[in-house]
Amino acid sequence: MAGREKMKLTDAAIARLRPREREYTIWDSRAVGLGVRVRPTGGRSWVLLLDAGGRTKRVSLGPVSARSVAEARREALWRQADPQPKKAAASAGAAPLFRDFVAGPWKESHFARYKPSGQRTARHYLQRQLLPAFGAKPLDRISPARVRQWFDCYSRSAPGGANRALDILNQIMNFAAACGHIQSNPAQRIVANRRPALTRFLSREEIDRLHDVLNAQTRPDCRQQADIIRLLLLTGCRKGEIVGLRWSEVRDGMLALADSKTGPRTVPLGTGARAILERQPRGESPFVFPSPRDPARPRGPDLPLWYRVRREAGIEDVRLHDLRHTMASHAVMNGVPVPVVSRLLGHSNVRMTLRYAHLADRDIEAAAERVGAAMAQAMKT
Image 1 (cartoon, one colour):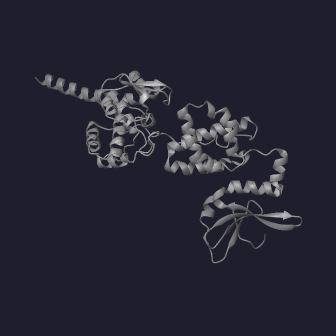
Image 2 (tube, rainbow, N blue to C red):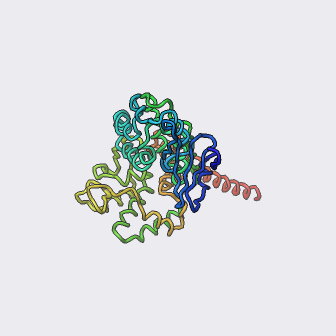
Image 3 (cartoon, helix red, strand yellow):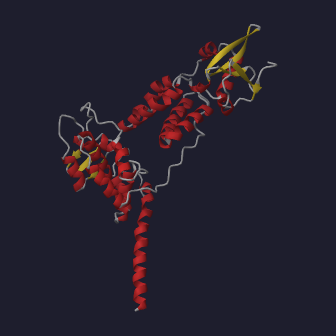
């Protein structure tokens, strides 16, 4: 390979390669025969030189975007060791594709045991993230570097979603290792994104502003979304619990949720929450908030109204889930015991609720200031 351009290929170095008037190839200084072909259009693809009966054969390993440098080097070594890896793998019992393993053994062993809400969550992350990223790959070709690349990319837009998808991937790959398809889980060393500290909940003034903006909604679909937002704030329920609420779960002044995150639970309803439910039209749909397009289904999980009303209310930094935090925070600050708040929220462990306990310190500090001021005034007289 004398006279050819060589360098230590890295993902960052490849990203810096620029197109020229003619197609050119940069060869890796670490993996003999591996190179990146750059076309005048800017397209980049992996190429590999193989010995084919005494002559050199150039083969393509696909676009650069399909695999990392580490994966390309590993593929190069496999190809050079056996120019017909597919036939060799078939005779030795190749590892199944990720999508086939998920649809077969893993689905039967794990997915079937999920609660309905857990199945919906797993299906969402499989269809949106895991199958597009890994579905066409054999289990033993999914490398830690590729998993890291996927996780980092997803984390930039949705760190919480990336954590949940990583949990599912870990379960799948651990089961694959237990079945003998891979030696170790390539996702096991990836550290999940840290959850942000609980620092945001609505003040009384912000709740008033939000209430005014919600009251200004006049279109039917907007009124439905506004009532969902109100119920989230009044009950502390999770979004999925309200969006998918059935009339059969509304009974005797409470919600009897059949499938919450922590299993079946009941949610007591105050006067305001009961009034919101009573004004919902009762049609043939089994859902309290049916889809405008198909009443046989609940409305979708997206609530576009939220982004507009929070802007108009001046609370653009507030997430929809922060309404749940707001309900819990105000309950604690108004003297509701933490174990009671824990039951209201449906927490599986009271320790999850203790993060709200420090919020009561503000009222205690304010009371101490008032008492101190009164005592100081008394001592002057």
